[in-house]
Image (cartoon, rainbow, N blue to C red; front, side, top):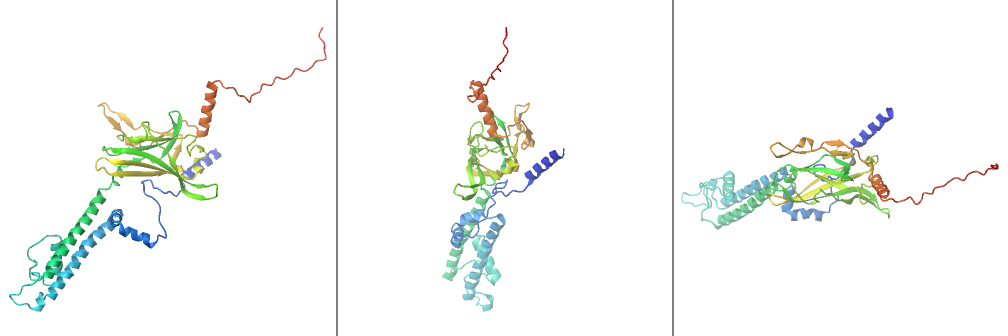
Length: 373
């Protein structure tokens, strides 16, 4: 009894120990870049559009507000300078018949208000440019053009940020755990994925990468070595009909990296299984990618997923998401190697193959000195 409790405790500790992972469950990559050269950093400014799109909302809104306030204040200073050089301000005591460059600019505050009205094309009609000086007309043209550029860039960046397919990926969910059990007579690793929207993901393609540390025959240690993992559903892994939750599976055969693992040694391996789902959003025709990952503690050997789709009395199909992550324990071979050996032995037995190494030895009868009469 004590040994049984100790075994269960060790299994619990192994499953809950913290492992470093490259991809989080929600698809974010846990990686940082160090000692990047200055020339490479300047490349971010060269591609300013992508840089703005990748910024967080708080930084984007800070740049948005700073760009508008900064341009308004800068041109407010220029309008004040024009009025000051033309001696339009009240402190210069202009005569009654004097025509200023800009009507009703009395100080820096009024110059800022005129700059704001000009750039956002409000035009209250109280302040306006006259034909008295060409400098004011030239400044008006420059501010109007620059204001259109700023408005187009910032509004376009916000609209592009809102409509990015990254938000659509939030409505694609994977099961918290992966399971290993028999499916169609084969040992398979299974994962459940669901689309929470009724709109489809067109041209869906799903695949996986197994990340692990390997040592080459030359002695080189490769961290995050990537091994392709093929996933499929019963209809194939191309152009998924993603109208209901799907159970994707990877067959653990002799070419699979899971082939040499077993139920007892699974937690001793150090790997991370990253699963990708690519597709086109039906509403926007934009391509999106959903990612998640599984560590050995999140792979359950000897389980299968509980049923999730049923049919109502009205003839509709109902998806019960309360069973989306539930698993049921089933009888499963403890390794892929044993399953294949068992199949090979059964096939040979069915075909009547003899064991050529078997030799029947008949013991010789002992000699007797007695003679029967």
